[in-house]
Length: 386
Image (cartoon, rainbow, N blue to C red; front, side):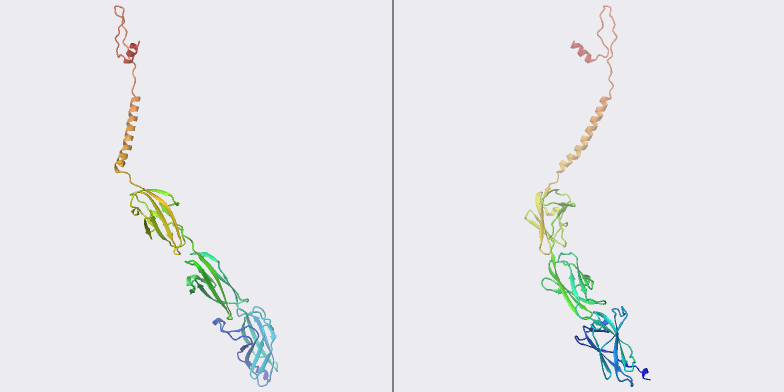
């Protein structure tokens, strides 16, 4: 009959030798956190026929996900029994436990060799803070995306951590990353718009509550702007001279200037007039024809500047009468050429006739007549010349 009444127990209450119990995330609320040897106390009700306990055994295995990775090992552990309480001493070294999540099942045996039911407990054994290292470049340019990573190593399967990030500028202002900068819990994507030295800090808390902080600095460098002047899509070299005609439609552009952030424009003409805040010049900015010196200066938000200078030679438009004369000259020349060609062709096509001679008649006195029909003046001239 006594065998029908094995010892009954209530949930254990742990008592750690070297640390106090710590609270962690809700998912880990059932974990017993230890960092060394500890005492586990639970209530045990013996049946009337039993007078004492003879041993307490434990089945122990590593179970990071709630399932044993290997077959549990069974060991006897030291215990003390007083009244209805049993205190069991669990030593991670004796149980050959490395850091990690472990599942332990307790079972007590009374003096009649009757076993109690199993009492299961999950233990997180962690006695050191995680190793934390920030990974980021030492130097970047303004507006250049930069990835910041944190590497965490806690030394066991099933480890998990929470992260707290802080960004600190040169004047000591602290801020947390905005949502768009948080790529993952352990990664940031930052884009700095102002030059300076920034500090990046991260605090990492592991499942056991240990915290490690690491920080690193990053230098953000300003990219100096480059002033460029262009006309009709052509970028002009420094000190070049460009010829334009007054009254025609042309625009001098400065918006091809290079920088990784918006710039401000300052135009200076002949060192006596200037316009700021506009990216183009039109003929309205020039009050006369002739040669003008044009300088473009660009500024970024950090005060860095760059300039380029060209010369503009503005020509006066051609007079209207000259234009009219030119308009008549070419058609008239064309008509003249046509007339000359037609006349030449007409002359070359004229038929040449041979001179016709009069028949010679002998007069009665034996002399020849000197009269000719269709006499040729050339022949007469030749005869006159003998």
